[in-house]
Image (cartoon, rainbow, N blue to C red; front, top):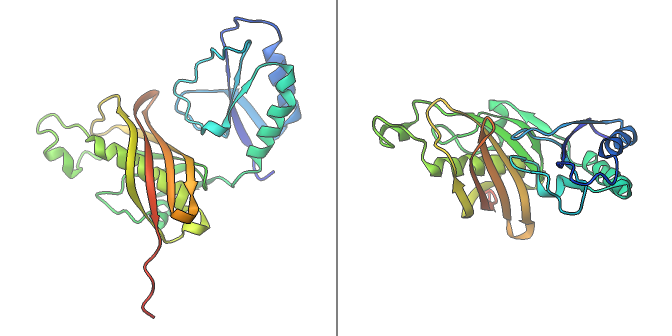
Length: 247
């Protein structure tokens, strides 16, 4: 197994006590000594999140979780113990997670200031997911006109933050080295809170669909300020290959 994986755990409200939920998680931890099982917090990236339910209704809240859909796992009883163990082992054997400082981000992304809207990446799992950070610079040119005396970061900048984070998870794949990522479309975009100069943003992206032969990818993005979800969207991207060399 390439590296240790942190697993976030959420329990339902205990409406059905047909099995000891804590005991099952402890047994799972014993079966996976390379995993750390911790309480899942909103906005924090995890290798996977385990939702432990007492009944089939799955009433446990998943609000604020940023884990990709394929790594959001539901445990409903002792009968799920071995399938969940196998699913987590598969996650452990996935692509090696990277962290990127600003130079590392700029080595992958073609964007440059003032349109480079990612400062660093705390987690990049190539082809799977990425978590990045951006400190909203008070001197961004857009604030001069949006709006004078009452600056608010435009929603299009939030979409661009999510797109650039999605670009990291794609451009970190060897098959897309040197490619230029372009927007094809945006779906299900929601802007839920104002983003102001000086705000610290956590940006998350995960791959929903990829047609590598077409250079097409669909990603889900989320932006949080602390525990507050400020924006989310689905982003359609076109990966354009480098121009042929004249030589």
